[in-house]
Image (cartoon, rainbow, N blue to C red; front, side):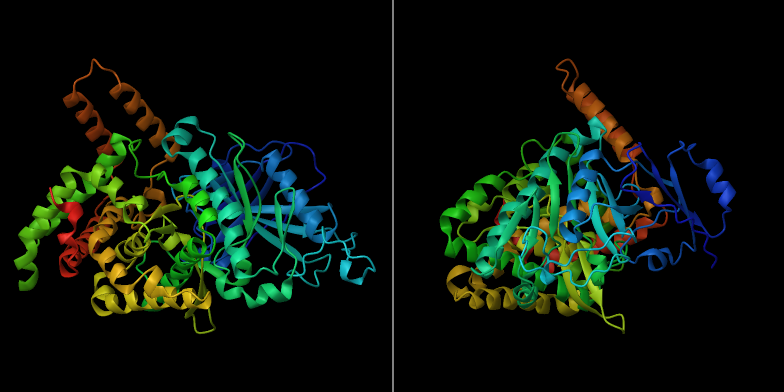
Length: 564
């Protein structure tokens, strides 16, 4: 494979407006062809050409990055992000003279909440990084001992998540709420969790930059460091962003969203999830007033609420109906499954007819107190990063993307993951094992804080939640699986889709329009953005029929939520 890279990098001192173009070129396409299709660059445009074999693109550039087979244009880093970046570099390295380049992390349609970029920072050669450890007077505002022995020529990476600007997309995708929620998780919930881990760990706050000032202590707590560090953020309308640690530099990679996970991936993911949930129970036990204050700020679910649009409801129901039809016409079912076929169809019919109402009840943590917890809310492949050993076996996992954090039954995250990211064969063999791994990790974490799991979250309660709330995994599969199995090139343009959804919503609010006309418009829109095609339909069928069969197998169809 040939590689042709022009290493033109933005200097931090350049004050002119600039556009960074990262053009990912397929190995069978010429540089000239790509450039001819690109928008004409301004005089301050930096262009980088990367020639890759698209079959192995993720491993060539960065296994954690999703690479499109099409030209990707990245707009300039916003001014407030640039200010945060300057503050971060100056805080870490005692210099504000650096260069940087960017690379897109997510492909088309893969992140509803904006652009995700990897920023690669180069410290300029003529600057000397100050080492405060050698100074007689300690300057804590510049010392970060968890990044040690940095040399001026070394590189530093971070990740920035930048909100979309299209107003229809911001409204439809609840962008403001999601950025506020994720920022709150980092700055409030994680802060309290770190306080729980040790009274000796201190955090310093400098322009919204959170700094660990005790490297040795942090190393001892690595088992509970389940997410990247937040360096800076803003919830300013239209300019929201989060500047985060790049976990890829520590060896954490994203798993291909289109593939079902292996046993090792599942065990690592659900153990980290169990730690995350356990810390919520610990906070409730150790500091109930603070816990209540936090829960009151996330009690309103930002996905399933009365504000859920009709087109969003119908999207989920569309693929629920498709899954049922596939089950009805499946002729190769095991005899045990055939006995449950009518029960599955009748139960899902109740869910279909009352979809929005049941989903709202499923996510209501207040209804199951004191056995509700602060949950991730969007727990699937793309929001988990894995670290591998030399034999390519996953050995560690981290959680990312907390914009949908909620207060609910902790098993919602578990069944969401198991029914959207694992295959039926794996569940058939290890479902009980997965439950044991999750619960044992949660119980052990509670015991580490001198809390009896039998009092806080008994195994019996956990099992009951699995049976009662298991159908939530199927609900999320109806939304998620069509996206998961699609190629990036097949995903809709989110700005265009959002504008169509807003137009439909505005026309549907017209009192003069009958319900039948509204339904016809909704159906037409969903057909326009059909997710399934000749390649993905058989995959969808295999995965969704497998989930339906497992709902019966694990007694989840007896849930009181399905009693009409």
